[in-house]
Amino acid sequence: MITQIKPHVNTVTEYIKWFLSRPTVRNIEHLIFLIVTLKLSSSILSVIKKEGIIKATSRFILNLIQSNSLSKQFLNKTLNNEAKVAIEDMFKNKQSNVPLFTSIPVKSLDHNTVLQYLEQLKKECKDVNPEEGKVFAYVYDAGIKHTEFITKANNIFAHTNALSPLAFPSLRRMESELIAMVRNLLNGDKENVCGSLTSGGTESLLLMVKTYRDKARIELNIENPELIMCETAHPAIMKACHYFNVKPILISYNEFTKKINVKEVESKITKNTILIIGSAPQYAHGVIDPIEELSKLALKYKLPLHVDSCIGGLILPFIEKLGYEIPLFDFRVKGVTSISADIHKYGYSFKGASIILYNSHELRKYQFYVDDYWPAGLYISSTILGSRSGGAIASAYASLLALGEEGLLEKTKSIMETCKFIQKEIKTNEILSKYLELNGQPDASIINFKSKNEKILNIMSVADELEKLGDWHIDRGQKPNSIHMTIMPQHEKIAEKFIKDLIKSVEIVLESKDKELKGSAAIYGLLATIPQGTIINEFLKDFLDNMYNL
Image 1 (tube, rainbow, N blue to C red):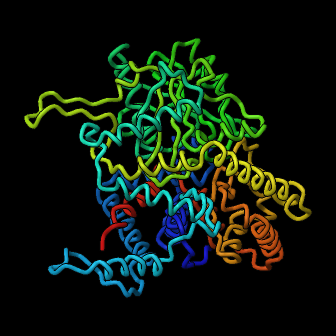
Image 2 (image 1 turned 45 degrees about the vertical axis):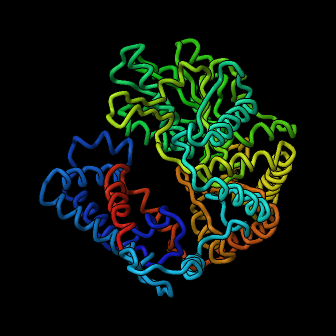
């Protein structure tokens, strides 16, 4: 039995984990176990062999529930109530000195009062401070002085709109220069390689999928498009497939290297294939897919090849310059037709700056939207967003100019030395090396490690102890359960403290006499028994639906 807890939560993943420990979910699991003892349909026996008895039977029962209108209505209501309870527990039962506004104030508030409210909200809600180095995702920080500098740059252009480069030609120039800088960094041909500045990696990937879908539809008359991607590829690509009605063909990855299985890629190519995608690196394990091998397939079958380098595009070139061995991934690889790279990650600008590059102007045209029929005039848009603040453009521009290659090399050197230090400790420390191991061999700034034996040391219990010991914000991975870290410059100063706390956390878990799994360890264990695409998905939708309700 899982002990009911009120967890320390930092991410949506934590909310899911909390949800899975709720009594209602336990009751559903108990119901599944009861039914499995009474009836096992022969139609699910083959699925049992593949998924295991708990998952297979769970899927069978949940499908039965969802096929009946009354039971489905009850399940949906139950999940929605659980989501509301989760939101109440995480956000709404907090005492605040800031008034709750549900309508625009009738009278104006003075500026100082509003600013005080903002500062108070940040303090009360205990937002993470990236400069402390206790968080391993979300914000890529280059130091307080750099943040103050790009804030000034942002503010100069905050009240401008990139929708019209004719009205704001300064934004057009900065955007064009940013595209050129990243193109040069990724060895793109000056005459042919072109691109767009987007609001982030998700928009870059959405535009990429939309572009290739339209190209295949117009040039090849493909009405049922498919793209090939690894299971480790970023979920934003799946999101794009969902939005644009493209079927994703998921390829497995090598259990040891964590790289996409290239032979499987070739076996999945059909007349409807419009695109192959590789990652440099993939976020889960920090590993670069074999882009050169994928390129050979792309050229052989005359298919486009996109490289998702959203997290790697602004750091891999500098890792290579520092002398580390990095597999080729950019436009030096003949078959690569497009690359996505975020400036707001290792370019250290504010959020809202990513680049999507194409190897030809003709290809980029499939990304654009034009409307010559609108009564208000001709409408043209290069990206998904229409109106865009020029602040993010100015922030990205100022960041790259101020840091320069010299500054980016310095930051990258710090990151790689921190990565190697943490990896070395995991491999050589007497305690850590006995119980932990790297999950894959990372090429860049991501570290993922797991327990050598979950029966002896549960890695999720270690993550829980880390959060208790040092107020660390720990990201957790799955398949298998693991701890995930994205290393940034601010982690150099806390690396030794992290290792000390990691060792202590391992020792605490090993020495614990209470062997009942609790916290995220218990919840991830239960998660393994719940089939994907069923109850969890429904809860997540209810959770989002309730997230911003007051």
